[in-house]
Image (tube, rainbow, N blue to C red):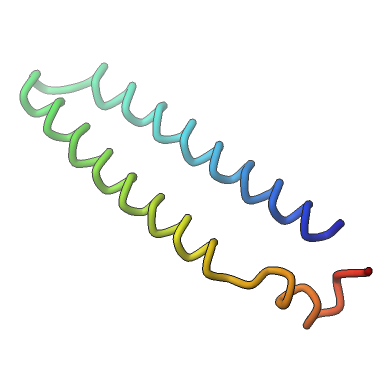
Length: 77
């Protein structure tokens, strides 16, 4: 049960990250100084965001969550 709650919480945080990125991209495009600079900044921001999201997903998949929760006594069979 706790394991499912952790996965749902992680999914919620990922969705929050994506929505936050969409808000930032909107503001970068709306309040840009000029067209070239706006496109460059959005590209730079999205490149960094995709790299960070990919690293986050990779490291999340590397953790043995069941063993972690059993160690702290939070998984009940």
